[in-house]
Image (cartoon, rainbow, N blue to C red; front, side, top):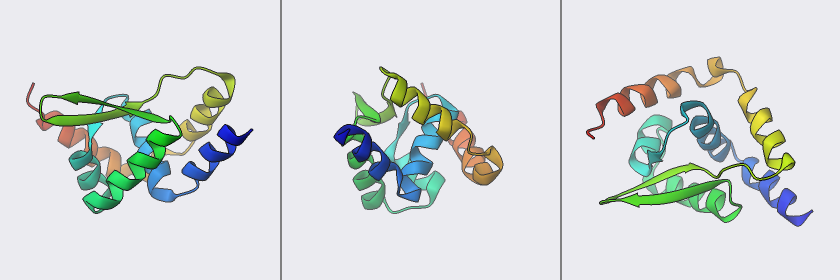
Length: 111
């Protein structure tokens, strides 16, 4: 039960919940600088939040060239599936500006 408690603790912060919501709804890898711009948070804070999410295995990172991208950890059990389903129920209207900014940023990416 300790793992589940740690996941709930990690998601109890609004910024971390927004990060997971964003990764869930864009279904794409995203880098720290993009999250910083979308959520209008400081780089240090976003990095700290990502580290916490990574420690509870909600997100993973992959390095591509000079960039480090974060994405949701693949779901491996029913508990994680239920958590993900609950996060998906947060209305997009509550994150309208963030999702709009994110789509614009992702559209500007160079391959």
